[in-house]
Image: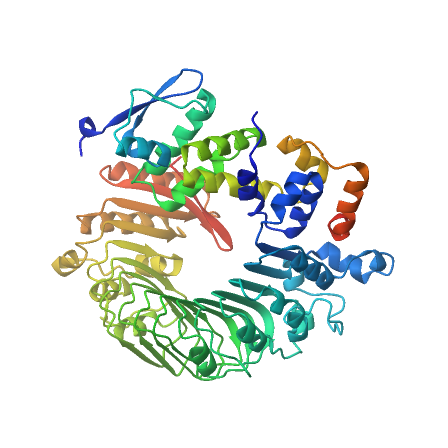
Length: 448
Length: 152
């Protein structure tokens, strides 16, 4: 076999996930050693193994301190464009023996430590990712954002996890286009400093960010946003004229304001919406709606006409009162042009019990449905089958039906369901699968 | 577009085996695309650096990725299975993907190799890449001493 020429070796080496693997490659041959110098990224993760060895009295002295390794790596490279440092999974969450760790050897968002390496590489640095050791970082407030913003003028991506960040001394960073803050305590209650200092952001991810009171995201260039907050914020506002994709997970904000006229993909998970103000979603195509108060939410959602792809998750069974419409009928009222509908277990169970399908009105409402995906629990096979058959009758354009059956359902019941459905209607493309809570969905290709 | 309108190309491997492919799939390889656009297409197109075993695999990948009916996640599922091959084959495929200038295949292969190299020892790197150790004993010792933490 022909040997790989250096440019191809560089292609492979530059994708190595850990600088430790690269360090060993450098010892393999002089060629690899010189190629390694052209790599522009550092990726150093502290393994659980290294952590325990550094704490045990026998091995402590033979282990190089993590920060020392990192500084050494920085000094080896001419140009550094991307830096990623962190602690491996078992160290990120979970119980440790020393829950009170006074040391700072793995306190990675420490601004003093960042001053040891940032100034050397800041000129070409484009991407920083720090996944800190919560046990050492949660009780120390860090000014690292100030250090980064005063040195890294070319930075475009910033990702910080598991730290307590102050926004004092944060300078504007007009080149930053992507910001991720995950499990962060942020001292910027209303996100004013974030909006002010990162005006060019196109991608913003705030996941499990604490310390927010009345957060308001106001960014002109934002295209994609993920905002996952706890019960704490009083209100939440997102004003982003160019936003196309939004994932919003909140609990019970008293006021929720969404002003995103170009939004086409929305994932909204909310327990109950107090005052829910949505302005002008004329381009909404894909919607994932998850709520314990689904019926109320549907009542206040005026922008369903453009939605083509709909997923509904009902986290609490709601019994329609008197002659009020079933949830399914409500859905089709609000979203008459849906061509692909996904019903998760709660939503399907509700639909089975209160289908409300009957009469010309319903026929008219389901005319656009082409694909249905549903998660079935099959408590009563006859009920499930009659529901499936009535959908088939009422949806003239239906071409695909993808049904996932709960793994705990007895296999002969599953087989029975599958064969009766497939025998009943051959014009449909059937797809069958199995689902279970906390498990990945699995698809069987054409029944059993 | 009916199938009779589909333009076909014939690719010939280094060991003289011929393969018929759709032009629309083959132009994912920029080397072939340039030949087609410059109207320099001979019939068949000789690929001196790719043998039939490897060419067959490249064509398999190429045709899968050209299928417009497949979703991105279905293509990813295919990729996962496609790369389950001996390391040597992956390296040969990389050489072919480079020669044909097939970026998508290159990316999938290089990412796979890098992933497989996790926690390899120095000896494994030399063996799998078929690389000679050109360090003297002292030089190698010095190289190891530069980054002792990688051997802890």
